[in-house]
Amino acid sequence: MASAEDVKQRQVVEDRARNISHNVRCTECGSQSIEDSQADVAVLLRRLIRDEIKSGKSDKEIYKKLEEDFGETVLYAPKFDLQTAAIWLSPVIVGGVAAGVWAYQKHRQRTNVHIMALNLVRGVPLTPREKETMIDILTPPLPARRWWWPIK
Image 1 (cartoon, helix red, strand yellow):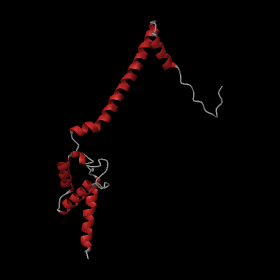
Image 2 (cartoon, helix red, strand yellow; image 1 turned 120 degrees about the vertical axis):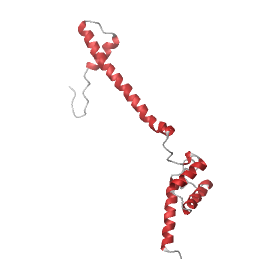
Image 3 (cartoon, rainbow, N blue to C red; image 1 turned 180 degrees about the vertical axis):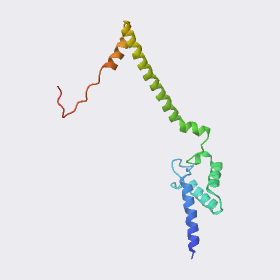
Image 4 (cartoon, rainbow, N blue to C red; image 1 turned 180 degrees about the horizontal axis):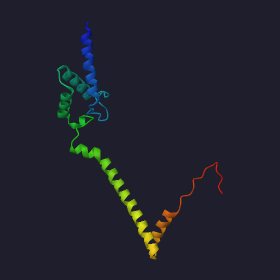
């Protein structure tokens, strides 16, 4: 009969193995972790991880060995380097550029309104596009229709 300490030790190994297995992608399935996959490769990798844990290796050493053997794509959380930084930060950069373009256009529109107003004061005629812009800016929005409020 196994002692309580042996049972506890096996439980620790099993917990560590499951934790590592959840963070490793199945090389055959691609979309599942080796913990969730029933492919032959996943079964072998789970056994390899348990053997490595029993031999006394740390989680980092096991991840490093898996990465060396199967490549960086085997890990769900790849290292943060220049290449992955570009991938992770590209949405932020695109959003920043879009916000900058929007702000520049708003600033330019306001500046153009001031110039158009000065030209009107000076008696310079507006182009049809400038007239349309001035009407859009100076026309107040229509009040929201409410079903309980009668329209007059």
